[in-house]
Image (cartoon, rainbow, N blue to C red; front, side):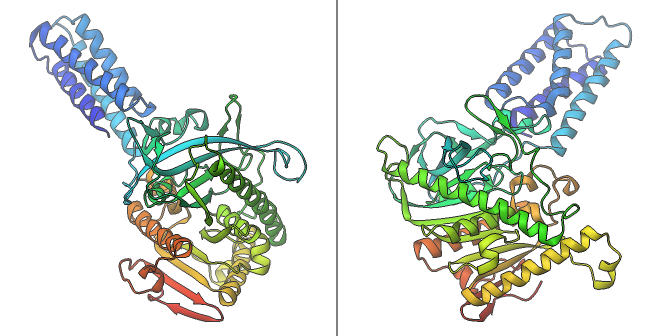
Length: 482
């Protein structure tokens, strides 16, 4: 819990105990306690923001305030029951705050402060769904993280309220380490550019931990909601579009292996085209003297990365656009041209290790058909990627103790792994590893700096099994198989 929330709980508990044990301090004492509660509540609302997990606590404060205005007579048990009820409400809020905490992002480790802005972009060369290359109106909301010079700018909230659900609405008041609309820091410009793709039906903000880290080290990072294939997307005119019409990808309950590859290829290309369009717009903004990105980006140093299907889209965009020099896929299958032909540019793949274990042939034979189709798809994808790495070179690593969702902010949402589907590794430890390898990869491939992590000469992360290829057909393994 945050400071004023803790203070509110403490004051409310004190008031509850006063009622419970009928502490006779007079009307002045009760009203002074109410004044302290209201003052703490005002500071909480102003500096931290209200959220639904504290609704029981707010109710208990209201009840105590009513008692302060109209003190109860000493006779009877109403003080007892009210004290018990308020104590229960405080405890319930504390439980909710534990289960769904107002979590904190790891502090970015780079030398730059981080600014962020949200932009509205329209691709008029494609239809709204992005499926046809013809005149239309494909709308995208894009968020940029960049090196900044904050001067009185407020910290950005994690998400915008219209883009949350009832349960996740608290994330609209949860603060990040980035500053809204801060002035860009031109001291190190022009900076390399990175394009990020979220997971299927994910959000542009889903890897804020990584966006902030990269921006703090001198990268301009652009992440977009792939409209109709992401979570809720709120547009400037008030419309909100979700992914209710998007097909289920990855579970293979209603598709064959070939159909899954065909669907994956279709949507990978759509998202890759979104990447290329956003990169076009960033290039125009760099040339526009009125844009905050004017002179900020170096279009000769561009990379793409993503999570799950977004990782495949990043690699596909890298294949299609000569401006994109390197790609990183975080725990995603490959689809499209990259799967068919490989990627003759620097490529890194980071995979989970420890929560998803392929059954033995005997065990697999007893599983439902969709499970067998899933593992068949995984096997074919792995074989194609292995061949591509041997042909063109690249990097591949596995992080022990991670699951698919450790590659997003989701691992911070709750300490209950059954809710977040995170692996047993501590979330901040997983983020440290992901941050370090991502930064090393793009620093090496875009900035040309030597990185011990990529040379396999460091043992900072015993959780990592690391492989590197130098074409043709040579592999270097820096750690024992986990």
